Amino acid sequence: MKKTILALALLASPAFVSAHDFSYTYAEGGYVNLDGVAEGPFLAGSFEFGDSGVFVFGNHTQAEVDFFNLDVNTSELGLGYHHSVHSRVDVFGELAYQYAETDLGLFNVSVEGYRAALGARVHLVGNLDGLVKVNHYAGGDFDTDQSVTAGLEYSFGKRWSVVADTEFNEGPELYRLGARYSF
Image (cartoon, rainbow, N blue to C red; front, side, top):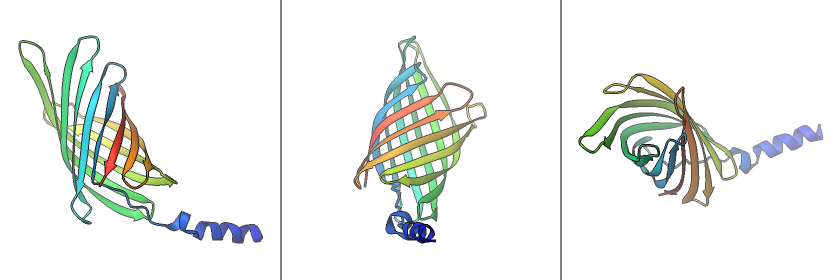
């Protein structure tokens, strides 16, 4: 009986029931690697419109394909919405336009398409948050495809954090490691 009361008291403590505010307004930069085939820097950002749950986001990557000495630039711009379903869990949706181009010397090649995603951000413990989302790519020059993104964010106070995620499907896996400043 004492153990049950202690467990209930622990679960009711502020460490377990306090709300966790996820930031959707941030700037981020870091390194991306596509299964050892391409790598390079990336910049990303997001801005939430007040407390509406609506946010815009974007990112840009300049990756070099190792065995061809070829640069590939990719950009994404999108709109999202998040909603808190628990004091430690947000669910979200994203719609984005994507564009990629490369310079082949005599001419440029570009592709464009769209991405839709549904996911969740979860406050795991202490300064550690997790993310998982399912992506659907289609339209424009893209073949229809799905992928899963899983990531972690470790915060150093309210502003700075380290982020890491991977996106995987039947093709090559994408790995990102970066630093984030939340506003």
